[in-house]
Image (cartoon, rainbow, N blue to C red; front, top):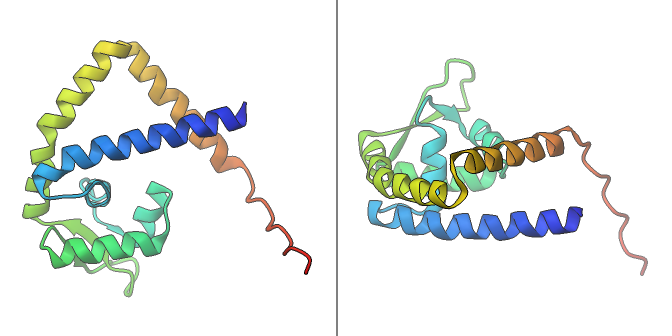
Length: 149
């Protein structure tokens, strides 16, 4: 059952990435740029905080954050809690790019709700949230020993 669930999540991830690329493209963003900008819309965060919230590596977020800053879509600001770990926040251009995604995102949400129903869509979000929370409680598996020569 775990394998079937994992395969379903992998497929869903691919589908969401494809749809996200389509939605983000007219705004001049990629799905990854959208994801990082979206993480800091409410409040600036350090790169490590963005990575934790998204469940990806700090290095991949750092690369995207640096690109966003170079493009003028985000900026680094001082972090009062940590002198070296600056906070990332969207610029007005970054917020405007995210706003351009809004109509397409809303249309997709409406189409999904038409297919699944509002309660079905809400249930899918609850189940995925429960699965993610359960995985967060599991200890990291030990590394496998290297293969014998």
